Image 1: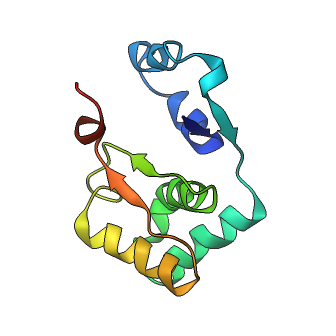
Image 2 (image 1 turned 30 degrees about the horizontal axis):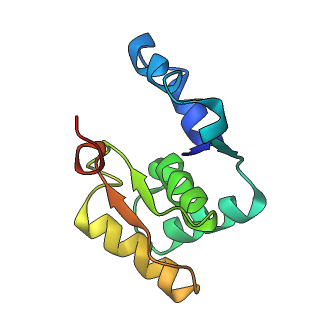
Length: 114
C-alpha cells in the first residue's frame, strides 16, 4: 500500500476508529511517500488547468503523489473533488498531456469487500 504524507496529514483530524484502520496493515506492506517539489508542481498544474478550484489543492496533492509514484489505483471517499467522472477525466487529461500514465480512481468499496 502506498501511504502518502498528505494522507497522514489528513488522518490527524480523522476519528480514532479510522486512524486505527492503518494499524491493521503490516508495516512491511506500506510504502511511505513524501510531498516533493515535483508533486507540488503537478498539483499546481491541475489547478492551473482548472480541474478543481484552488481550495482543493490537498486533493490535487493526493492525485499528484499517486501519479508520480505510479500507483495502480487511488482509493477515496471524496466524491466532490476526486471520485467524480469529470474530475477524473481532468486529472487524467493533465497526466496524459504531461506524459504520465492514467490513474485509476475508485472508492474503497469498489476495491475491497466492505
